[in-house]
Amino acid sequence: MSTSLNTVTDKNKSSKGHPEPDLAVLELDNQVIYEDGNYYYAKKYKNGKKWKKFSEFEELLNVFSKTLCVNAYRPKVEKMDPKKENGRESKFGGTKPFFVKGEKWPTDVKWDYKTEKNGPEYYMTFFGQFIDPRKKDKMLYRIFILIDDNDMNDRYWITKIELNEENLKNQIIIEKPKYPEGFFDKYSKEEKFEPHKITGWTKFKELGSFEMVRTFFHIKPYKYGDDNTLYDGLQKAFYDHDYAPASGIKVGGTPLATQDQDFVQNYDLIQIEGTSYLPYMWGDAGIAHVSEDLQFMWDCC
Image 1: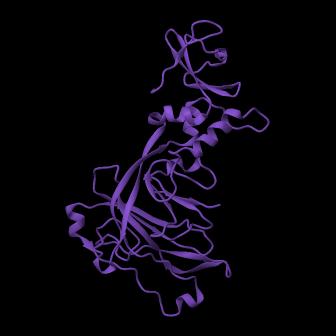
Image 2: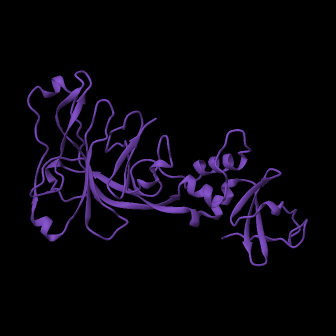
Image 3: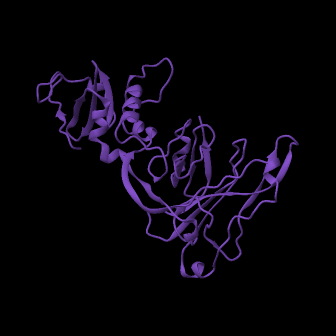
């Protein structure tokens, strides 16, 4: 901890002569209470408790930033000539994903809401492929998702494959097959994205999940009708903080959602949000996530 704590020496004053908060209610380590317009943080030691006063919750988050923050990685991208795609590069969009012999472009069918039957077979949209910057392996993650006019993007083909000697030797080039002439006169239009090569990653830190921070300080969950001063103070400080979880595309870090923040915390492989180089909005300003075990989910406002 980068700031000193006041040691409690008697009932009414600390060793520095400051008025003492009611430490009787501070029963847990790293606990915070709110009294007289101030936040008091206390920590247990063998010889008793020590405490520190903060006028704003943000000050407390600053003190514990190293403990409460996690690493995230934002991609550096540059637009590339489609003719220079070789299928092995990390990128978003493009027409040449990495495939090996025996694989084919993933497909699925869309539900036809007019006939209430399965419609024709669609080729999934290639969103990108990348190597996790947090790891030292050569595992390439490939993301294909079936785009649906009704925003039911719950069918996907997300896999990982190692760029080892054998797979590189067995690489084949498969470009997205062409649809029959007139296909999109009857069915929804095709989505495709221009290739943008990932040239590197910018590492940065951001706060862990709100639930993790709330639990760290032993603050009770919000409950209607209760005194939620601590909860409200933390919530405002958390989302206004310089290290608040970032939106956009990132690997690792703290996943964001437009609705249930707790639900997406296990989907921390990559967060995908509409950007200039991957312009898909996921419904009405939504966010998509992929988990370490290659599960996919998204939500929108």
